[in-house]
Length: 395
Ligand SMILES: NC(=O)c1ccc[n+]([C@@H]2O[C@H](COP(=O)([O-])OP(=O)(O)OC[C@H]3O[C@@H](n4cnc5c(N)ncnc54)[C@H](O)[C@@H]3O)[C@@H](O)[C@H]2O)c1
Image 1 (cartoon, rainbow, N blue to C red):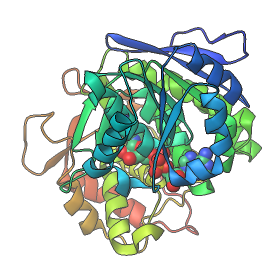
Image 2: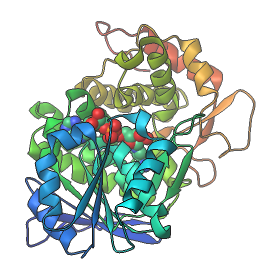
Image 3: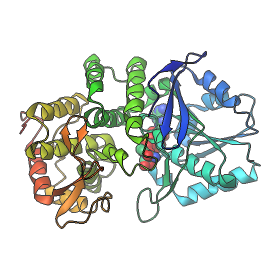
Image 4: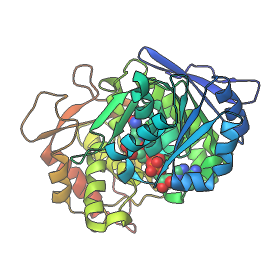
């Protein structure tokens, strides 16, 4: 868990200690602090820095890479931006280049970018000489509020997403929220939807702060971003503290992901890159989970309404995209990757549901329960029947 106390070091950076199972590392964050981050990296006394970034980030922030490196010899490994680069081919090419450039056990791999460079850097650091030091400098909200708070490092295979991976811990994470201000609105909102999930499923006490950010109407202001980042660190860390591999308590982070991921896949099949961003799909998945929880006597009417208030406040229309049918979503849900955690039961899918905000339903000590396909269909039907103009139906 993030240590309870938020401290500030001499440079003004805020710091929290992240504990995940038997590993721990500091997470430093602030605003306009790239020079301070560079100074902190220099204190690791590396013989060489190996930056892993993507072409768009490198072009936009080349000056920051120079500041981060300072006088330390640096190698910049860059690739075209996007998920399609999370491959063994790209990883292998980066590794070969680093080795030919003389990387040693004293070198430090530094990710500078979103979750894609972050995952590639994590695997590189883990593989080079069976483990060299890793530092993350995330530049997207998804990376800063989600992926760097997990030890999971993975790339995609030709068969599926995140199929090849390991768990590896960074020496430290450094975030400058000013970097998020250049993110496209779509990326920013996607990260905020994941944050909303943390509030609803893990830390409802943070809802008041989230409402303030939404009401202020400027989610991209550094003040809002600093609050969101700190609240995300606290919420995610609260459930991974004793769960290094995110296979027990950490499964609650999957709230909204079962239906959400299926909606995302169906929409992208139908509309390609114009499909819903990941976070918006997860927001719809949370509405599905909320309706199922309500129908089972868990969430109250008010608590379902809170879901709608937050989801619509983040700009997500609470309706299935026109191109996505309920049967399509159910077909994809049948292949959900949480299969195997619960004893198999015909016509059911494991779901994270809530008894109340912040309190998941459980099977034994797992925050997962089997849900019948007919229950999922009923909840999807509610979402499918809604349109932007229709009043929000609860219950
Ligand atoms: N390890 C984990 O537990 C975990 C958790 C969540 C996500 N992930 C992984 O992270 C990836 C998604 O993360 P992502 O959305 O950051 O992907 P990404 O790295 O592809 O970044 C998204 C886009 O934002 C651009 N970008 C990055 N920083 C920017 C900035 N400051 N200003 C403007 N544009 C910028 C990038 O060039 C890219 O086009 C997925 O591969 C996912 O599997 C891993």
